[in-house]
Amino acid sequence: MQSQLSYKPWAIFCTAKTCKPECIARFVNRRDAEEHLIFLRRSVPQASFVLVSDINESQL
Image (cartoon, rainbow, N blue to C red; front, side, top):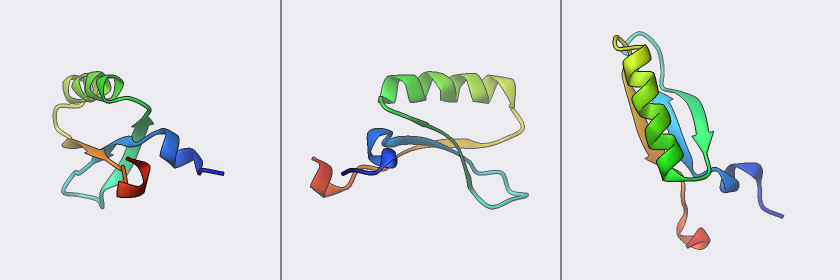
């Protein structure tokens, strides 16, 4: 049985200088993640966000 994280391989992390990187949200597909990333960057311009993929070679 696969873990729940494997169903949501796209993650958005907040990379603010004042704290350690923190996962803000996870998504099933890249398009949804990119749209939420745009929303976050517009809503919180003083913060820094990055989109990462969590796919291992065994899942390809």
